Length: 169
Image 1 (spheres, rainbow, N blue to C red):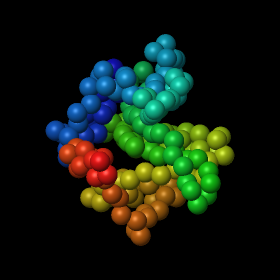
Image 2 (image 1 turned 120 degrees about the vertical axis):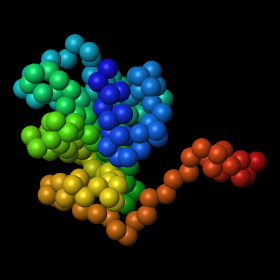
Image 3 (image 1 turned 90 degrees about the vertical axis):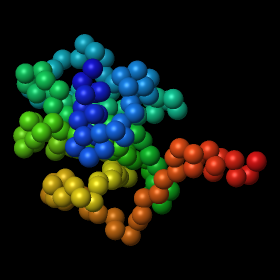
């Protein structure tokens, strides 16, 4: 399963190798993928065709080289903008293997996601990038993305999530 290897490579690249708790089983249970018999030709992107659901909310685009090797992935889910009153896509993870970088694969994955946003009459494509990841930031800016400096990302997880859930008990 190339997705598992790509996810671990992404965690390694982001300097968080031990943060990855995903297993092949948990990925297969929570992410929609393309059928396993999808063709792999000419640096093809294999779109997910499985339906999404609350227990399987994410989709994954897999990109293969002309030789059939997994070169990258875009893991995403649908989101919603209240102010635009439109759906969109949140890109959770974009990863292109180091050996496949500089070949337009990242652009191909992002362009495919942009087409999906437009196909659903969506309002935007969002994602986050680590502050130290200057090469990716420059790449994203080169394709028209911009930093949202007025917003701060927030998160509750682990024991904090349990504590928050019990605040009104």
